[in-house]
Every structure is written in structure tokens, then in C-alpha cells.
Image 1 (tube, rainbow, N blue to C red):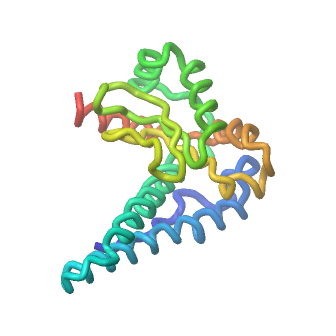
Image 2: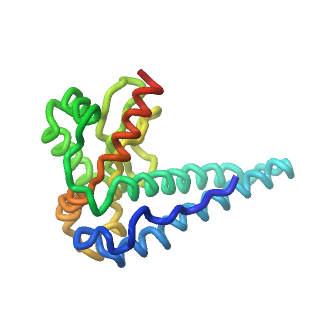
Image 3: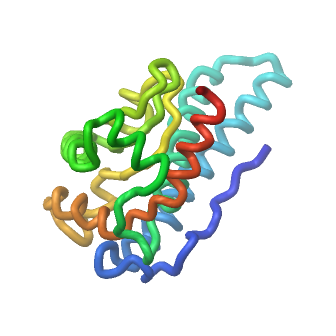
Length: 199
């Protein structure tokens, strides 16, 4: 199987002034494409090693699959989490579950912002399939700190490449502006999928 980079679900300038056209173009077309290429390359190496029965480079290729696949999957979710029509709070079942599991939307958001301020990679809202609850997670790089069985609901990329051109070192300002473009349609669908699968 070969993986491909889907186009953004909106124009490159659609999230301005919160995220610039230049950042979206670099981030999507170059940075995200690199993870897709890395995943495909690592899979090719594993396939060749299986055919030749030479597994000397397989451990490194497996690590590359983990790193690059996680980068691809999380970036894909990140793009889907935003839209020019975003900026509202969640509604419906997801809003009810956030209130149930965190006490209030404001409590969830405060905790999520704390995760985003501390992460060396990603802040994620996940459905924890072990505990059957929503949970905020600090994920360094793409996979360190992830919960086994965690089903990503909302992803915020806080690697410096996602904001430094627009905001410099003011990560908190970038996180604030992320909430101006969050579109809860995809996270709500992912939450419903998790409930259907695991409850």
C-alpha cells in the first residue's frame, strides 16, 4: 500500500489572519509530505527485507514507520480540525461528554491549553479506550506520551514549524488563535466513531 498526501480541505489563505498562507503551504506541502514519503520509504524497506530474508535494517525501518505514520495521521487530523468557519465551541454529544469528563468546557480548554504549552510536539484530546473517557494528552514528537488505545479526537500541532513564522516564540498566542479556527465537525464525528466502537 502506498500513502498519499491529501490536499488541504480549504485554500492556503483560508485561515488568515490566524494561520498564514505561507505557513500552511510550507507545513502541508513540504513538512507533511515528508512524513508521507518517509512512511512509504520505510514500508518499501520492510517489504524488501521480508523478500530477501535480510532483516539487518528492519528495526530502523520499523521505527521510521512509527514516526512517519504518526506524523502523517496527526497532521491529517490537524488539517481536518480547522476551517474558515471554525471558532465555535463543540455542541451535541461531544460537548456533553466534555462536560461530563472534565466538569466544563472551560476546564477542558484550560487543561488542553496547558498541554499545548508544555508539549514538544502535540496536544491531543483523545478517547481513552482503556478507561472509556476523554483525556487530554501531551505527546512529544509524534508518539512519546501517547496512550495505548487512545483514539485521537482533536489534534493541535505545537512544533515550532506550525507557528514560529507567524508568532515567533509566542506559542500561547498561536494556541489562542487555533481556537478561532477550530471546526468541531470532524472531532464530533471521531468521538461518535469511538463511542460506537468502544462503548
